[in-house]
Length: 65
Image: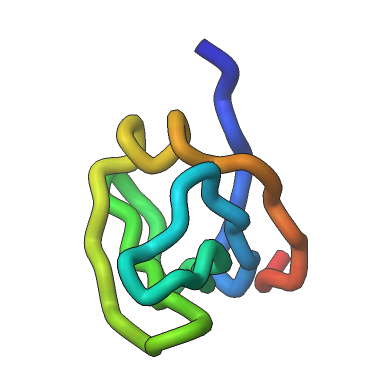
């Protein structure tokens, strides 16, 4: 499995859209669980890192280095 690197502040484009229709999420916290916010409806979601990495289509950098 390919390891996807992202950090706090990056935007993740997902393969499947959120129920609101948006597919871009902002990373708020990283670790074994990753906290993201939908950029369309501002819903806060906590997802397991492995599950999240499988669904990432693209990483748009803009995070804290």
